[in-house]
Image (cartoon, rainbow, N blue to C red; front, side, top):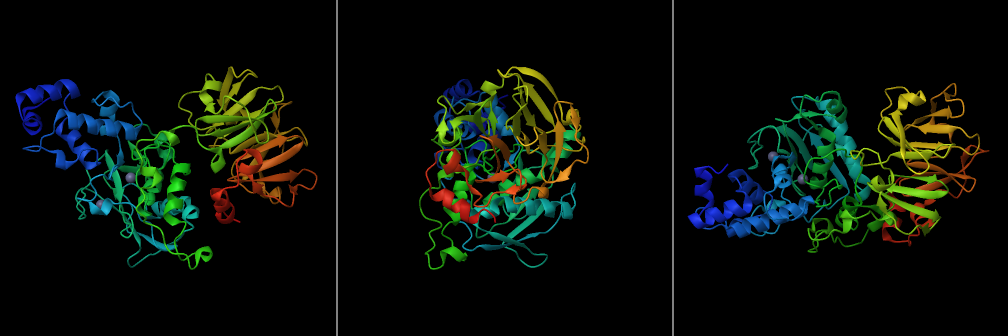
Length: 510
Ligand SMILES: [Zn+2]
Ligand SMILES: [Zn+2]
């Protein structure tokens, strides 16, 4: 629709109007405002009466498409129009004109300290303050290890990061817009505050699946993103990163792109035990990697040397490593199979395209391969043809279990172990029954961390993997061998010892 009002706004002359209309399928005033608000269109380009040439609009649309990962057609096609309507963060995507205005969106700095305080001022209309507080704490913990940060909750006084819910105009010059579209925004250090739009129906992911009627916005997913801003991160054009500006689920861990950003912001900050006497180099003039818009580097397969994989498993004698939608196959430790990585959907034909992550996978005694995602599984023939699908209850797993972290067959007793986060079941495939007295606590496997990302049997040995490290397990002693854990990337993925690896090994937990 091209109303006369928009005509008036957009057009200098009738000729140009027609050009805009034909070339661009006429951006609405809202759409032009969107391009301005998120940094794709500069106000400096405006002609008389707040008008733009079709060329400058088209350029802006291309930038927006590039950032979102859409084909850069430069015209307002349907996928692009959908972006205007999507829930998203209120911060800019591109900072090109930051020298002129919106100074507080220049995102180049982290906190110049390791100890950061936060305070939640209220709950939302749909979630209690207690519940929000717990999720907020979890969200902060997602980021903390990557900046070596420590967060302390305050119940009164001014915290570094003040968090609250508000609707409409709430006094900071960035009014919220009612239900949908902008759901939250946050200010980088040294401001740090996070605001959530209380006109959204906030909830958690499980509320969403139970009740498709209501348009629930997952608080945790948005909180993790906004916390990123309040730590100094800017938007990323990497679709699977937490800092991608459009709302998407699930958010359960950081992408390598997010981690790189944090390292750039926090590695040399004073106040940590290991960097006494080092000059602070945070806030250098280099543009952070994660703001670049012209590179497809991170949209391609993730780098296993960052050890950011989802799971791995031995299938038909080879090691399959899964990360996001990708699979890499290793013939042996440190020997990659040519032709990989490829998207796992190319292998597992029949797996629903909605599955973006393989949490765990294993090969049955009959060489069939079972892929797990949430509380469902898909079983494939040895040539990866879909045979059947079902839910965890088929394995006699209680129906309140929403996801398994690891499934593997032990070479010790040939039983299938089905591991949730902190407990596990033992299943006898030959009889199709669950062994008695399960679940048991993961602590029975001494010195093995949990939740585990993967457990495999490789050349008669059992290995457990978590984060960047792995443990070799002694089945007789029922404990991990001494001298473990060791770094996974160098020993399995043929990675050189590098800076990131050292960082992980030192800082990523006990
Ligand atoms: Zn954002
Ligand atoms: Zn605000």
